[in-house]
Length: 268
Image 1 (cartoon, rainbow, N blue to C red):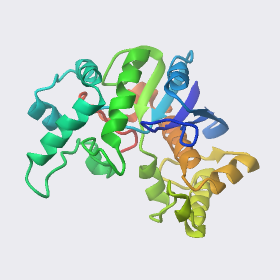
Image 2 (cartoon, helix red, strand yellow):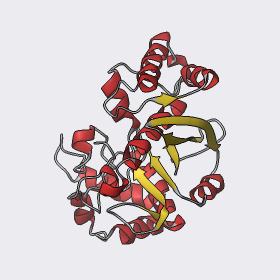
Image 3 (cartoon, rainbow, N blue to C red):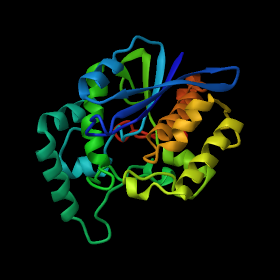
Image 4 (cartoon, rainbow, N blue to C red):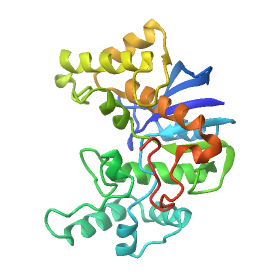
């Protein structure tokens, strides 16, 4: 089975692509083979239709908090919800989330999913820094349209499996130090050192998922040099996909009782 780790952006372009780490799991080791870059939506949609079998771990929220969905009166079936927000479009989606947030008490503006608590991930209500709500709006409808299988959420092509990933969850288990920034003026030696620590832990398998990563010297050099951390985040997601693949017969490592409307971050 092919493995993909996908570092996502809601606005792909030449200078900020959707970055995909491609690899395989063999003899308990994850082999990073190469990277792909999608600078526009047609290229990403073409990637989603890559024939299987494969498992991809995607770094964006697959669902919205159930409490938010109830508040807005939106559909509580995942596929119907995704179709609904896609029909709304970006501006109406943004306006609905802004209104819902402003209607909540100060200090409680953002509703979280169940998985966001153990993963320490941002609420999908968040529209800036980072715009994970817009990432949901851009990503989830494309997963649905491509017919992917989302375990526990949506039955699709069982040879093309999509899981929600959060690279920061694994990175923080290795070091609490900041390792990336999209602002080139903040590409510091300290952040490069943190990336080096993460890569070395991945290569040694000395991290909570326990899977050693096989890389080439040029791959390591590219990861360490890239201050935005996109290559590293894609690689972290690749390792999360490998961990889940080992548990394909047990719901891909996902809890039995997670909310199928909200989704769950694999390994959380």
